Length: 119
View (cartoon, rainbow, N blue to C red):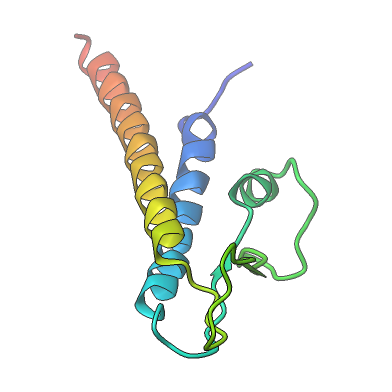
């Protein structure tokens, strides 16, 4: 059985796309930390990666992840559900995982280039 290059990195390519979308959502949450009645949003990364990889249930929203609202630990008087420390931690973790997937893809490409060159 032959495995194509795209098949070998598809999981990490899907992960990069979803991590980018999640960073945008988390950045929006952070940017709106002082906006009255703003509701923090996020999505279940693992479920969306499974769906994007074809091993999870299909989403009704097409290519966009199914967004949900984050439930705050401490409620705010102005109705804002953004907890800055939580959002910053989630953003930092998501960025680190983005970099990990990117490093994996780069190593995979470097390995293939070495094989092509006969090194």
